[in-house]
Length: 256
Image 1 (cartoon, rainbow, N blue to C red):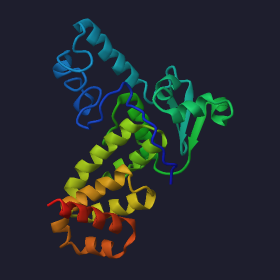
Image 2 (image 1 turned 90 degrees about the horizontal axis):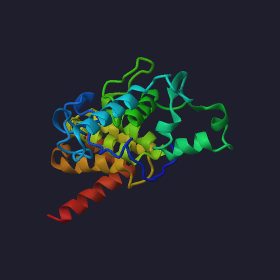
Image 3 (image 1 turned 180 degrees about the horizontal axis):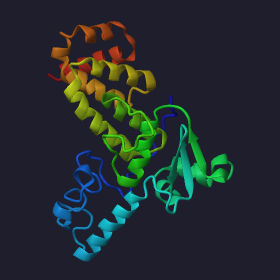
Image 4 (image 1 turned 90 degrees about the vertical axis):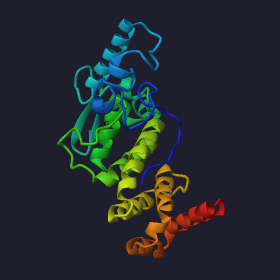
């Protein structure tokens, strides 16, 4: 589906990738997260700075986040299907070698036109990737009406595939964390099986984080899933999932 690469990258300023907090804490508010409680320098990278410096750092991050989907100072465009998304090279290229090469290498058309076009795959997933580059997180509810949103149980896996293509290791970690939380809610439903089918249909590497995540969830609930006829039918189909699941289950039993 996409070329698989694994160059290390980070979220915008080296932030961690826990979905419970973004650059402004939970749900994008400055109550917690990077700057500690109520935006004070009690913890985090600015804990030793005077309050005035922390306040400036907060404002700087907020200003950068405000440039998402904003034509102000924009010097490039990402076309997602038929939607034109203004971007800023200094923000996206410094985080992703993929975008750096596309916009800076004169051999590529994109460096001349200033526009990168993506016509295939989920428009919502592309949107969330770019949102992450500006905010250090992506919205659960899609922050645009330009695209039909992906189903909740497939949302994060689609972001992961693009994060892999764009060489964004921090985003891969973030999307995996969010996916795991959702699968722990839906493991006994058909949504889990649908997620397995899509992941194994769009990836080929058994060390892929998506595959290891669904395998971990499945083996963690192996006793109950053994009573699930739909899950057993999936195993009877064979293929990579069945083989990797049985292998993981065997290893788990060996350590008991």
